[in-house]
Length: 392
Image (cartoon, rainbow, N blue to C red):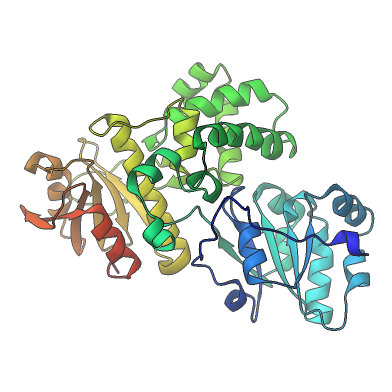
């Protein structure tokens, strides 16, 4: 049945950027889930990497209805030469995982199963695949992927969703993204029926980006119950819109806090939700955006290459270091062109623990230098070294 297949095309206004994830290498021996928020480039990556492969797009109503009535149609339509199949937005129909499981076992078919939400997959029985499929996450564009297209101010103001980064009207596209997300991810999944309340919460949550969240204050500001706020944060995590950054707890001289921080997956999306457009260097908003951007690069590096945990450190006495990679590298982000000794006091305090290998202050300075035992780095130099795997 030809109308169960769709061709996924890259958007004409967006140049194709080669991604770090190599789908052909991933799928050579094993099926994979490829998870990522909408518009991170999953469809473009499939179209570019898996030409000629049969794709079932569950956002296509005809395809969705056909397979919901008869999941076995996938098996019925298999050709002898088919060794790989793609099911796009598989979370819309988790019952298909039973058929996927059967075809992996009985016919040796490999699947790429994409999705923008882990919520329905977990509820729908993703564990039925029992190790027969691995999971990779696709993030917005990175410094390494953009290469010569990279522009720091553009990345901070627009974020790194491909269609927005290269857009002629990024502000309108970001506004539309928030509305599209509310409609597609929240309403369509039935995660909450109270869309006005969730919309209020989402804007309050955006203002808490990169902080330790006070759930009581969020509940008051969003005019919802505290228990509802916990539920809404779980929805944001399940739909891959926010990441939780846990605390590093191995310091001995200073007692660490044990609460997590939360970051939105894309700086442009969170800036739009906060009601901002332009960023002014030297402001606290600019500094927060730089920190969120660097978090994105570190999370992408973790998921694509290193696999090492990412944490932050904050002592009960008020010292705080933005990020710690594994148990070896501490990173403080300063949106300044002239870093002072006062700016690295938390790194110096952490260095007293003698637990880590290196202590870095990533900044807007032009050259690398040493400041009271701390390495001060220009941000682009840090990013080049990070993606060259020099911090391990």
